[in-house]
Length: 348
Ligand code: AQP
Image 1 (spheres, helix red, strand yellow):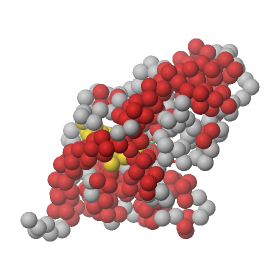
Image 2 (cartoon, helix red, strand yellow; image 1 turned 135 degrees about the horizontal axis):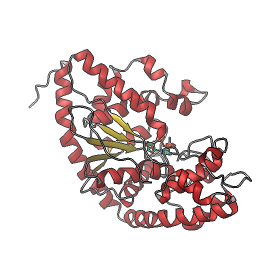
Image 3 (cartoon, protein in one colour; image 1 turned 90 degrees about the horizontal axis):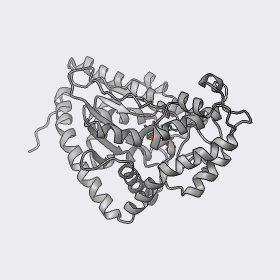
Image 4 (tube, helix red, strand yellow; image 1 turned 90 degrees about the vertical axis):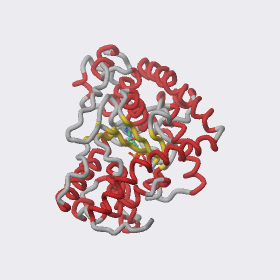
């Protein structure tokens, strides 16, 4: 019924959670179910939580500066509206804490080209014209490893799509420890849990729901109103078959399975429970039920986001205060990294 959540620390580092989201567009239902909702749950379990709008990741593909600023504030509003409390979690934007960029450079010198060449996200995002992609897009996973390791984070709640990057983070940390003969960086554990670890596009059940998908119909945005949400679900691609009695019956029905998973995640049920409860229902019946559920969960979040966005100066203040707290954790770790790697630190 509920998601597994107990965080166990596999090594001698106290449990600490880090995760981030790119302000590379308006956030989606995928970001909410795969990330934001779980970020708030982890905070509520009483674990130390550090969350970040990763604006430096966002510029690995072109971002209009005014839009980036707006999207970063909107992302912060989405965190807060989803239950992340800036008093209990550290919430900030990445570029305000230079430790991320500094450690990323060290990790660029630890990571091997062969490892980076295997990263599927680069291949997906660079597409056929990889020669024209930015060097930053290629190095993205080393910056992500730095984001996590700058805080000695032990656990990272993410969607399924980030699994490979987390494995790379483990490889980089292990190689650093090995090369310098230290046990300095923890070997991080991904937390990929729940019914919606990979929410798929509403137009194509084989593609991830993504904020940068050119089709707005493919996703539910956190800023969509009730009518837009209902219309998108009504038009979502499905098939003509009724819902089966068991999950096995959804094996070759990607779009149907996606809507069942979304329902399960929104309702706090398992996909098997949703199927059992709706066995035999046609999509003409199931879609309106899903739309009502989605609106009832998302509407309060959208309302609060809109309210928070009316005071951008207050959002900036929250991000600045969060960055101060983040810096206080990361700076001593960075100082140790410079020491371990043999770099003189003699400024007063
Ligand atoms: N469709 C999804 N289902 C479940 N989780 C998802 N996440 C993203 N999409 C889904 C999770 O959200 C967190 C933040 O992701 P991100 O914004 O840093 O980058 P992304 O994974 O590349 O997300 P997008 O929406 O696809 O962004 P663009 O279009 O800019 O590349 C991560 O934990 C991710 O797993």
